[in-house]
Image 1 (cartoon, rainbow, N blue to C red):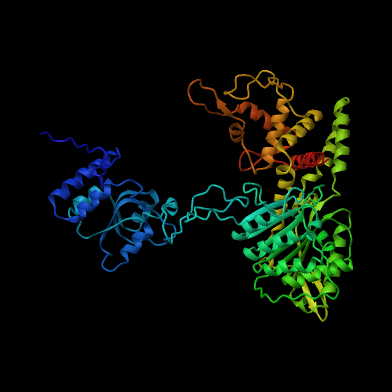
Image 2 (image 1 turned 30 degrees about the vertical axis):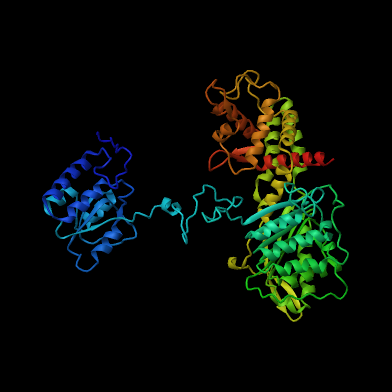
Length: 639
């Protein structure tokens, strides 16, 4: 009978018997303390020996503050502090005590402060000579679980473990950590509702068909949304009974704090599958606002005021107590009238009384030179009307924000540009150059902040409450009283959804490539007919005359949709799989030279500019061109 051979190569040992490091000094210390642990009966040497076996992660550093706290303990003032690791400095500690510290390693600043205080910084081999048995010493170690990575380890009940994410932007989902559901918490939703193609509810015969409007509302009500941005195709949607029911499900079933309802550009009509409400729709819309008990910010298009109808002698009440300040923002992209019409004024009054608004704001677009004065007159007219109501004492703040401008200097720049092009084609004498420099300076006026509506500041005014009247106060408002800005985030999402997510990417790229080719300013390298765009390609592009313009248009669109993009990201984007014969395919980056020429050409014509954070970002002129091309493409698709 023989004995079975039992292999031990897969048996996991619980502890190390030697360090994995090749450091010669560490190996000498291991031999020294191995001898002391074998020849002495002191547990101190065995603990130090086991600590020398550990990895760097399990030997965390100890700061001078921890050493100071140890020495302040009872009976430890005259002892030697031993650290099997690194001792680091702590700038928060003003006075370093006089002490003897033995450690595996010291940082330069920590050692200098210890010696300056009159103490000693000795090594572990010197400690072995002074105290072979560890007498009159105190052994400490650093916190093992203080690293950032430890916060993301493990799963268990009542644990605040969150997944590590690289993107913390406002447009990303917020990671909520591993739970029983393994899901993520969605706190903001931007939703476009195209009522011409949707249906109220999914058919029972089509279980795998698209969700209806009420089905979407039920799903949203189950989530814990904080911000909801709804973009509808026209204000007439407010007359649909299913849409108001959809809003009721969302507002009553979730904890929404910010609600935005805006219109987007669409020439489609509402389908016949929707039920139109027969009674006035205003009371039902106010019931939606009453059910949103956590609402603190409401943004509506001013055009909605014409489409909310109320019965005669209607009176609204709201018994819900709201402790937080509530903001109401009215949005009008082409604001022109200085006064409120009586019907619209009553609707605004009903909404303010229902949500108990403490801040009323007007966000408008400038269509003429006197738009700002008209906005001031509009707000004064509204306050004068609200002063006669008992709830007027709750209004504390009003604001005006010029967010768009349709009377900018675009035509002036085009006029100057035509003259500059004519001068370049003419003879290049000294007078022509002087005139060209003057015109170039005049055409660059849009670079300054005051001429761009993107950088217009919001104006806030306190409300003076007198007997039966309200008026605006010109005193500055403290920053702590200002409401949270929700409009700009929703407006950016609307433009992205409207122009770039709603517009097919291929149609936009083709349209912008044709624009660049007609313009004739994009610098095209001479090798476009021969060069390969990637090492994984076998042939150059077949469209030798247009492929560079399409690549430039695609790169400009990609940079527009992101904060800043470098050549390396474009190489990954335009790369593809490389054919390796019978071996599996793998990714091959695109040519960096081609993409670098593309961004350099776009930079020369002013579409992109160098970002201070690295890479390129879209310029103001480039954004204006891309917005115009996207709007034209959207109109052509609608036709």
